[in-house]
Every structure is written in structure tokens, then in C-alpha cells.
Amino acid sequence: MTAEPNDTRQSRGDRQREAIITAVRELLEERSFAELSVSTISERAGVARSGFYFYFESKYAVLAVIVADAMEELDKLTHDFAPREPDESPSEFAERMVGYAAAVFASNDPIMAACSLARGTDAQIREIMDDFQDTVVDKIVGLVSQDTGARPVSPDLRALVRTLTAVTSMTLSHDSAFVGRDQDPSHAVEIVQRLWQYGLWGRDDVTS
Image 1 (cartoon, helix red, strand yellow):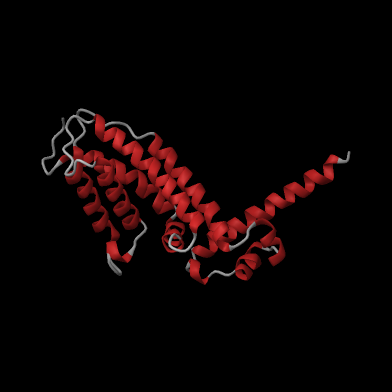
Image 2 (image 1 turned 180 degrees about the vertical axis):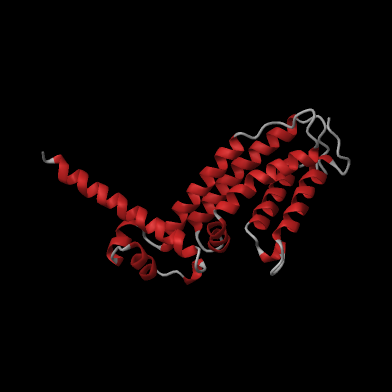
């Protein structure tokens, strides 16, 4: 009998925490992360400011939770990375790899844009993204190392893959330094795919 009130409070707490996370997701569809304030988030979530700070120490802490969820989603996709098939050309393989990432970035577009901004100012978000990038780099290096047709442009395969991964991430997050201002990002994504292909297999579109 005494356990029921505690269960009720815990359930209400979970709902408030999720309301805050949902509020940030919604607000990022309307404005930049820099424009968000704790008051605005609390009002959208229907939670008092004191309630916000009970669950999160700052708006960056909320973003960190959202980022972790997005990285987990992408990790599930990259977990299924398979070696290049004998009849799969390097360009097709590069398109497949970039396509996995593009699908997640597209579904989390405002979140990834916020991450790009917050990465330089928040250590927790930077660490989450760096840890994930290390995992992805390890997976891709393993795949390319097994590919007998690979001809990487550098003997330092890990550094090469890390650079390509970083370029892919910034392009898919629509960083203006990579896609330009008011430009169609699909053109930059196509170039990224070619960079993967040429960087790891050379210009010849071999299949073995």
C-alpha cells in the first residue's frame, strides 16, 4: 500500500522529464539553440523553472540527452555495416555508408545543427560525439582493412577515415563552410560520397 504514492511520483517525474526533452525538440524546429532559454523551455513543457533544474542543470544537459539518443540510433545503423560485396562497386559502397548517416541526420536535422553549435562550448556534448565518432571510425577501418580492392590515398588509414568522417558529419549537419549559404546540400553530399570513394579506392570504380 505504501509503495503506490512513490510509484505515482516517479511516473509523474518521468513525464515531466520527457516533457522537457520534447519541448526542446519542438523548439529547435522553430528557432536556433542559442535562442532557447530555460524559461522558454519550461513554459513549453508546462514545468516550473525549479522543476526544470530538478532534472537538468542547463539546456545543454537536455541537448546532451537528445544527442545521445541520435547517436544511439546511428550506432544501430552502423552496427549493420557489412563489407563491400563482390558485385558492389566502391561508389555504391560509399553511397551506402553516407546514406546511413544521412538518414539519421535528416530525421534529426535541427538537433544535429544544435550539436554543431554546442560542440564547441559544452564538454559533455563534445565527449558524446567524440566517443561515437571513435566507434564509427573503428568500424569503417575494420571494413576497409578487409577489402582487398581498397587503395587508400594515405598509409594512415585511421587518420584518413577520421577526416572523411568529420567532413561527412559537417556536411550532413549543413555547416555553411561545407555546403555554402543557401545552397542545395545534396551537391555537397554527392562530393562527400566521391571523397570516400576516391580516398579509399581511387578513381577507378573497381568491383574487386
